[in-house]
Amino acid sequence: MSNSTIETDRDFQELADPYRRELLAHCYRMLGSMHDAEDLVQETYLRAWRSYENFEGRSSLRTWLYRIATNVCLTAIDQRGNRPMPSGLGAPSDEPERPVVASPEVPWLEPVPDTVLGADAADPATIVAARESTRLAFVAALQHLPAKQRVVLILRDVLKWRAAEVAELLDTSTAAVNSALQRARAQLEENQPLRDELVEPTDPAQREFLERYAKAFEDADITGLIELFKKDVIWEMPPHLDWFVGAENVVQLIRTQCAPSPGDIRMVPSAANGQPAFGLYMRGDDGVHRAYQLQVISITDEGVAHVSAFFDTSLYPLFGLPEELPAEL
Image 1 (tube, one colour):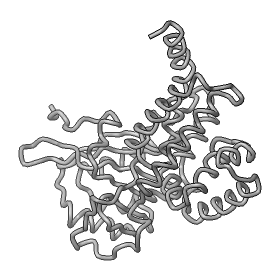
Image 2 (cartoon, helix red, strand yellow):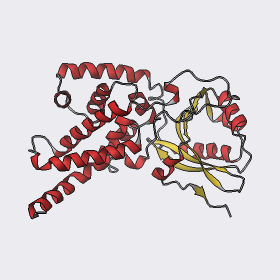
Image 3 (cartoon, rainbow, N blue to C red):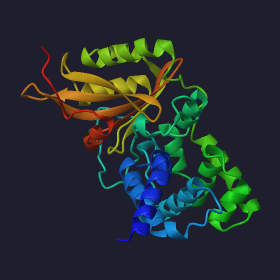
Image 4 (cartoon, rainbow, N blue to C red):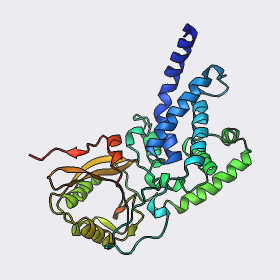
């Protein structure tokens, strides 16, 4: 390997690496999967490294990397399809006592740790914008958009690209970009009813509320959860197709299909998609609490409005959560 090649590689790494985390967030918005996003960022950097000698600097390196990442994501969407949530596939169930049906073959939407948001911690406005653009409901709504509408909305409304830049990337006209953006915004409004109601994670009262929520599960005070839920709370739990609306239905679901006793459940706080989350651990016959589900929670002034309980425990390491909890002293 020549010295010039080594210098080129070193230059590329030093200049491109600072954008890795925000590109990861971009690919996650596009694909709805942290695992897929990590693969696609690797593919993006591989393609960029191979082409770096031909990069002429007509745009910024950041814009160039986003162009490559977006095209990689579009190819992946064509090959892999969209990642839905159960509430996007059919009507809610009104039979919480009936065994729920799992569908592991569906490529379900995945939550993402807050640590990959790529926000500037010194800029509160940037943090809020990053949080809004990675909320679970927002990413789930994106999955209902055609791939190119998804690109247009993310690049224009999240990343604040100019319409002409998006048109160049998609090889289309500015008018077509503006039209696609209007359609995408209209459909997104229909799929985000909670957007303006959500309580921010920094709300001082939220910590106490979340402690009450966790304690209700750990004490098996399932009836007490009704006080914490909105009347029309939504509960869904990939990979199960069934989802439920209403506090009474959700409580009956937990009571009949989980039937916990005090001490069976332990809740470990976390954060996902700019929202509070919990790793829920269930005690086995040997007394060991093992990973069971990852709950991502939406809270409004009226209480818990939406719980997305992911049963894919392979997500736990992404959130720094252990597979088992040590015995309590």
